[in-house]
Length: 406
Image (tube, rainbow, N blue to C red; front, side, top):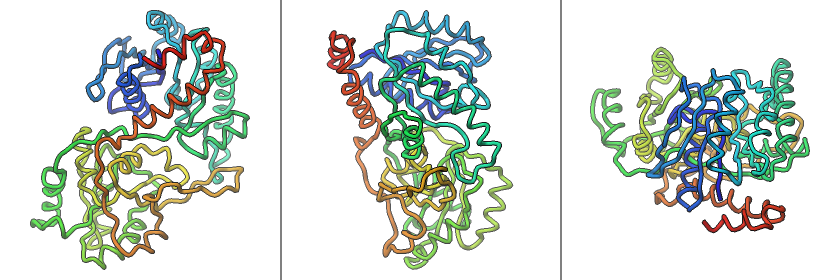
């Protein structure tokens, strides 16, 4: 099958959806399919870039179009570049704010509709519109209404054969607007690597904080990966962990790593607030290899995302794929217009109430690299393609069906 992935940006390490798109395209290529990727609104380039990007030893051909470029010219460049590839399927990896600073990408559906008249469409909704939370302000409901109009118009125009999303609350929202969708679980953008994250990266930071070295067995390491939501409470998290860590005579260490949004002043305040209750260390921004070995050095992961939105957290996906249980202390976001409670389908996602019932401290499970989720996601997407396209006129001609064997 020939698949053209479309997203907003493909700057490595700077765009979560772009990293997701690249890894998914790389996995399809690894399985024998032909794939390219196009960044339609890339803020990280100032001119048209046609290049090859690497992902785990796989080369992916990409076209990157700058956000300052007129959409009329972007269409010409995209059509010209894709004409040589002639895709069977477009896979749109969609997030509203990726295509416009306020998520108001009016006309996007009409623009996409004219790209190709024969290829099928797949849409992966990484996000929908604002105003879905029961407690959201009126401003967000109005703003979200405009975004909803844009999205529904895009679906109407593209008539996608497949629609996926990674969150149950988004699937339920789409169903209210008569859009059938299926869950395609989010995979980690951090491939598993081998290394000693404790000795190489974390032990020096803990020793510096304590001003003396201590054995790894004295500590219980709880990690926060990436950006920290302002609503997240470190103190509430520590309150949930301390009873067990104290029972087993462990010193609690909060490890902040990856690109976070907290200032040095904020961390100093956090250190003073927690004082003798927990040790706070900041490992900072790291490459994928270092992030992976840090994840493998931790005992538990900490989510700063609310429980109902946990399925769309790339940080949580990385923690779970690296064998960690994850403590979720926030439950302050609830989908408007539904009474259905969120069903936690993952036994390694723990709430404070569940944490309080445990008799032993959760520890990381040892997982083989084969547990990587991108393969399972690609397989599931491929299975959906087969079932969705078999009954189409183009599929009956053999063009698409035969391509599954490539």
